[in-house]
Image (tube, rainbow, N blue to C red; front, side):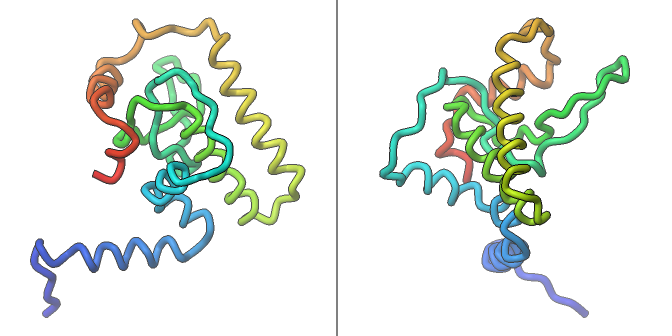
Length: 162
């Protein structure tokens, strides 16, 4: 009969399992290392990140957390589907994390460097287009999104590991 660790003894097993999954590929490492990513950003001595307006960000923006979402009319859009680590923060954090994830996915697929550059350019074009879109604004947000935004308002990127 298999025995399981007591609840208070589970953490070492969970950490080892997460590390095993992260070791599978560079892309898996990016997906599983949110805290390390923010520590790296925070400790960087290079040029500071551009200041964006404090806005609702995913906090864990990578390709694994994005995918197709259908509207009631059947229209599809690619959107963030994982909102459990949302915070109010600098949008540059999400853009850098998503760009890193896209580059790692491209590298893992042996795509040429020019393809990676084009992917990142399209990502930024899509981000910039969102500011000029005439689509529905904040009043059209579903109740669930409003609840998540209220919860995110009291957190910062330092809360992502909690």
